[in-house]
Image 1: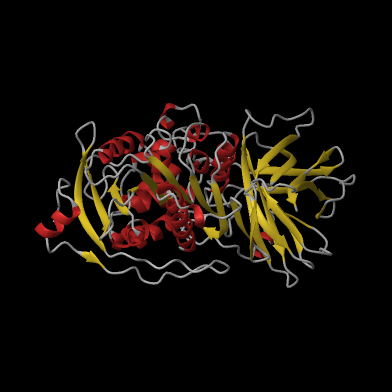
Image 2: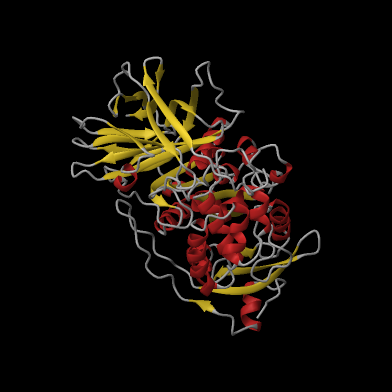
Length: 562
């Protein structure tokens, strides 16, 4: 039953005795090394299908979760394409109501009963219109916050800085102010994540179809078809957003991204922001760029990073914990739950949480660790040597094992199957004589030569245990074209490549290992080597690659060492 929003909560309860009351919040698991969650206090009522009219007349639907017995509860706004009830509501909606907040969960345009057509990432106009509607409601008491992970974080960024002084706090998880650079990672196309997302969202209102979509996506990336045919292979029809992404919209200046990229908000007036990320999340590098930009603009965001991937439910527990303290501080003027240091990181390898004053970590020393002759790797300088060589064949693309992913499990996995391939160069350090903590941004500086002007280079850093297992820790890639990394007189190109940020302890007796390859399929689409348009390329040409590591061309990784 839809309930009009003209009545107060007590009036609604009198007129609609059948209004459902949700049970008390069940016990939520805590995270290792964290104190237990506070106890929930309130019972909750659920007001369904509230109509919100947009400037163009389109009606979006929202549900409101109300804590019973709370006078003037602050509001938390959640805008989502994934539904207002069921699992989505349980995760992203009503839990905060048990702690005394009222939650408005709105289905974005074209999803779950809201009118219009879903236009991915284009959420600014509807978001700001919803805020203005919210301010006019009799049950709105002057302040609100926004909450949510991933796309729900994008809808927060869409209104950041433009929602007025009533917007008191943001809680962002595994998200960023723009998704463009994660879609075109290093200039390549994030095939697996992008195709997987458009496939799942095409059937998001049909939960029984979701697993079928996942299976069809996996089949699609193995089908050997041009990229422009993969959405139809997966979903049974062309997906406009996927096709738009294949037509050159990786360029930041392209008007397609107007209203879809919100990084400029970091430099303006913003509500205080709490950010939760994962070391293996697809959006982590850009979340950290947001953090750095906000700090540079004088803001004081809070940052938490754990050993999580994008679809890992554990970061949801962390986000709930951090949000309860953050909202209590900024909506209820009670900062007692805030931690002293704004940055809290789980150092993988050590398994311990550590707090810092900022990111990048103050006091970290950038060390150059060089690729060396004989497939060595270490902090001492390179020696005179010949380049190492391999051939990359896009018809048999170098596969990706583990690493950041949108829908799958992104925990580190043993990379020895990759290391046995002839199209992967492997460089390994001696055993460490003591623990080595590496915390911060990681970059690679490669000197390479290729028989193709259009080609990719991928770099991966691994932790090799005494038993020989080699686990991926961070990685990055760059797509080369005539416009970037120009060759010198010998055809050698210097490649500066951003890798995933890191917070890891390489233990005594372990070794560091680096992969250099030209593919990570299907995480990124294969480079055909021809320069043909991304979506329609059919011809595949192999590339012969050389990687230099001599004193004049010292290929290296730059590691932030504590």
